[in-house]
Image (cartoon, rainbow, N blue to C red):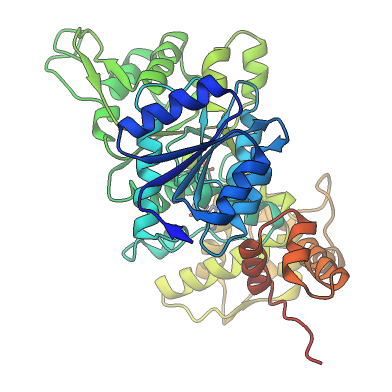
Length: 455
Ligand SMILES: Nc1ncnc2c1ncn2[C@@H]1O[C@H](COP(=O)(O)OP(=O)(O)OP(=O)(O)O)[C@@H](O)[C@H]1O
Ligand SMILES: [Mg+2]
């Protein structure tokens, strides 16, 4: 094995594109080799260690995914960056899940290629493990918890996309944890030292919102007495979280599109173009697709922000998380309020699990705080719950303790054990049959406490 620092393999079947990419990269000092097919690329990767593989998704004898899967199974995998054409953006999300370092959409803009590769090389040198990058000082209150299958996947996606600067869209009802998720993406990213700025599009009038985001020059509108920098400038080098994006006016949508595409904007009333380096995360609890259909939301903007979507399931659909969250916050409030409240009794727990939680986790947090304050003694009982929860029956799907128990038997765990058994506990084969890589399988086995039987 020959290891070369800064070595790169470009896999692309179109000879012109391949050569021009290689030429461009060589001119920037990367040691670049090329390959035109899956088979050839894997052959080279067997013989030689590369730092980065830049790989087209569509290849004549297979696709970039097979190369990606092959790579992530290596003991020291190269960073794989996939090149996707128009219309294959969904597969980019899959790529990130499998373990791609990043993806680029063709046509590649200006310095995007160089920047992405340089970042990948840099990270490889520093050997930063995603998930361990949570800053030590980060507040425990910001930790997202959940064991529901969709939440576990959401956390994985957070870690994966934190490594990119792609715009992310978070969907979810009010109180499901959208702000927390946006914050987690920021905290896991290499911008975590930079600012995290949150703005809600629903809270301000059109003019004020534009000025809030982009700033204004003196005299731009009545009341604009002095120049003012906006939130985009404030978020430079960090993340801007734009909530309730569906409320953005048509004019604002145009400005947003431009800042996403070109990273530049002008202040309201100003002529000078400003540039910023901001990772944008947007959120909404509205059906954006329907708004696009109704002509209320620009389609081009929708496609720009909808590259990676994270969906926060409502609390009533992830009942396994209810006891978990209740106990986390019970402990937290008991600590804070210096109350020795040590548990929630069965009847109260059954009610709390059957309630439909229109206000989601935020409502749960309020309910449990109130219960900790009100309860006499060490146990939370039905009487300590608000009227709305105590009346939890009509309309809402009934939740019995039995259903709760069956929901707790994690289907994902079952799936993994089945796959391992089917392959006589050969992890490599089991991982392959599950369509995940071996490292992911190890992590999951650890998380679910799965161990091979002792003979
Ligand atoms: N997975 C979670 N683990 C722990 N706490 C959570 C989780 N999700 C949400 N919370 C808590 O629930 C409350 C609401 O979360 P958050 O503000 O992120 O929701 P949101 O979707 O942004 O709400 P809104 O739509 O009103 O902006 C916060 O107190 C947050 O700490
Ligand atoms: Mg929020």
